[in-house]
Structure formats: C-alpha cells, structure tokens
Picture 1 (cartoon, rainbow, N blue to C red):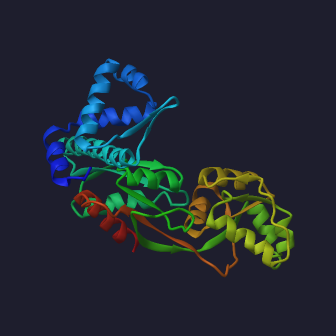
Picture 2: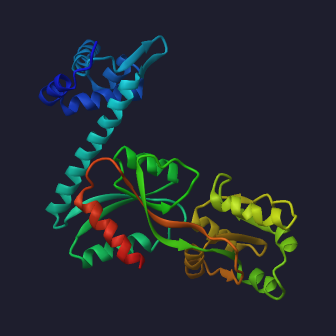
Length: 314
C-alpha cells in the first residue's frame, strides 16, 4: 500500500496524544503488553486497543509480536526515537517554566565527559550571567558514548567533552573550544627523584601506572610511547578516567604516575598536591569542545550557553 504522508500527518496532528507516546515507550521498555499494562495500571485489552489505534494512525505495525515478546519494527524504532525526544522536550518545557518562576531565564541539562576541568561549567554559567542570561543547569557526568546517546534522544541539551574518533558522531555537531597538551603527573617525592636525571623511559616502565580505559585515545598514545622506546607497555594498576580517584592514588603513592591533559593535571596540582614533571610530549590530545544536535532548531538557552562557553574558553 502506498504511503500517504499527508493523510498520516493529518491523523497524527488530530489524534496523537502525549499519553500515546508514553505508552509506546513503556511497551518498548517492558517488551510485553501484559507487563506494560500492569506498570501503567490499565487493562491489557485497553492497551491492545490503543496500540492498534496508533498503528492505524501510522499505517503500519510499530512492534513485531513473537513468543519472546515484542520488539520495535524499523518504523517503530523511528517513531520511538521521536517519542523519546518529544517526552524529553516536554520535560524541558516544565523545567524552563520552573526556572522562569524562580526569576531565571531557562534551564539546561548539560553532560560532561571525563577530563573536562571542573572550572569549565561554572565559568560558562558565570559568563552567561554577565551576559544577562540567568540560567539554571543540571549537570550529569559520564562516559561520552552514554552522554551523546542522551543528547540525541533529547535527555541532554549540550555535552561538553573531548573530541574523539572512537565513537560515532552521526547527527551531532562539535564546536572546539581549546586544545589540550599531555602532562606527566606524580607524587611530590617521586617527582623529585625523577627530575634529578633526564627522563628515563625504562625506569618509568618499572613504575605503577594509572591509565585511561583501553579504548581511549589517551591510552593509545601512552602505549605508543613505550612501543616507540622498544619497551613493553606497563600493565596499569588502575584503569580509570575519574580525576578525583587519580588524584588520590597519585598523592598516596611514591611509585605511581599518570599522563593527563594539562588542565586536568593543573587542577590536581591545586586539589591533590601532586606535581607536574617537566617533560614535553610530541603530540597533543583532541580538543575540548561541546556537542550539539544537528536536528531541529536549537533552543535559545542552548545558543546562549554555547556562546558563554566560547567566551569563557578565550
């Protein structure tokens, strides 16, 4: 049967409701009409009828039924992605209204990936304030893959992080703010011993290393330093990109070293009392910047915060 876009648009604009979108998301989550109906405290026949009505609006099945449960069809996956975004946008509307009621301009949900200095978001919020944009923010920290997925489904408005070829950036734009150089960081006493002589990679290889997770660009670069020196890559005693843990480990051990982005190293010098060992590496890390969605018109609050980030990074 031919697809009639005008007819589908007419049906959706006149009959589709937000509760329909919530229903579809619950079916996806539970994979069963019975479990979804129980969760939503409605009868299964009523839920079945509503789903049948929805599939009639879209002109095709949204879920495949099998003995293993229900899974979205290709059309269902597209509809569910938009349903998730529309539900999140409604939540953003409520938060903007709450922000305005308290005398602010808007509310933003911001994601921050590892190795972004703690000063970046507060400085940008303060810059927005100086620009007359009285924003409130919710900040979530986590791995880039998770945060960028949440950006695409509208859970987040902006993600501040490091550019990386490791994960897909389809549907996303990246605006670079500043570059990062690597720094070797250690406990004060260990740093004093290491700096008495020229930096010796065989000696460094014998120390305990904190390294980023295996899939990270920084981990690959650190490994290449030892490979180029003809040495085996040390097995890290800790794999993490959580800065506070790195700082505590370095401060407590006279055998542990780590290579970090320069601004994160400087932050740990202030808060953990560690030392940056003078050494210049022949490579740089990907720049810090912010990710936004290509699709749809950005909210004014997102544009204001993006401009504040640019100004603050100068």
